Length: 98
Image (cartoon, rainbow, N blue to C red; front, side, top):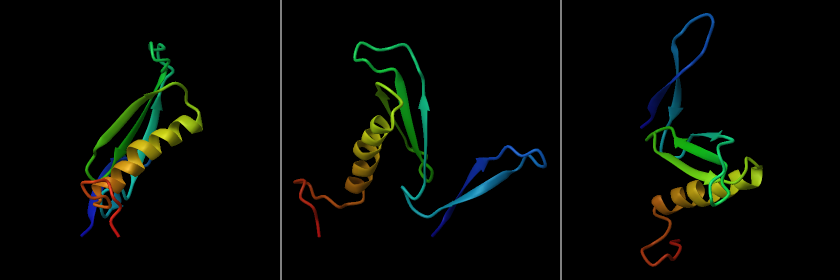
């Protein structure tokens, strides 16, 4: 079963919306970086944010810079691993299920 998620579209011809087809969680994600912000004691100056389109679940993390390596680390640790675990690919002991 597919669900439509409506996203506002800036269009000079019409101010309507465009549906984005999303079939299941983690089919589509939106990501953005906020910053530079005042540097924290931990040395972070940016916030990377990812939103899963179907459930609208946000994940955010403070990062030291807006470099690809920092964003990839966030994406792997907080998005890929989270979706892997939540999809039932690990059992309670942390073993991979086949």
